[in-house]
Length: 185
Image 1 (cartoon, one colour):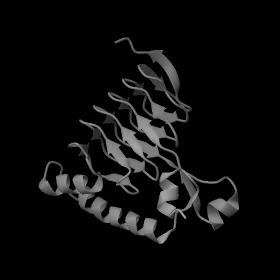
Image 2 (cartoon, one colour; image 1 turned 90 degrees about the vertical axis):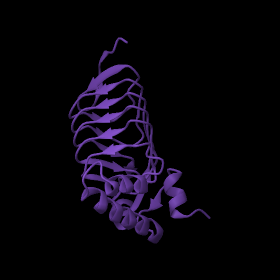
Image 3 (cartoon, helix red, strand yellow; image 1 turned 60 degrees about the vertical axis):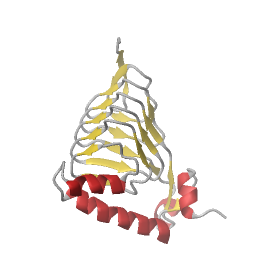
Image 4 (cartoon, one colour; image 1 turned 135 degrees about the vertical axis):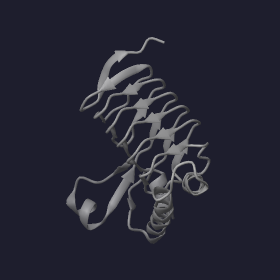
């Protein structure tokens, strides 16, 4: 029988209030408290990032930063997240090399049933992974819905709500986010 964590990582419905998952989220909050109360480029700040996100590859996270677990965030080299980044990482979030997040970017892998019983009474959740390719730039306030892939070299305009995949080498923006133009290399 699968644990709730195994179900979560497999994208299956799971009990978000499972004691193991709850405990892991609380441990993550403790590291986030250290990170968010530290000064960038200090040993305390770097240690918190490295503890939060395994193989962080020297990521630069401007405090405050928020996530559910941290361990489900997979970063490439030269990642930068500006102020107020939120990553709900109940499923894996893969971020390529040289990716830049402007302030207030929000990455949501978590989803909930539409029916009240499952959503409210039973506390059921599910997750869908998000993948962001190399050299992507996300403008301020971009929101990602679960299960999205962004192709390499693309730019997502400020305030966009990304509800479907965006191909490589484009500028996309809006609510819902849509391709505006191609980027000539």
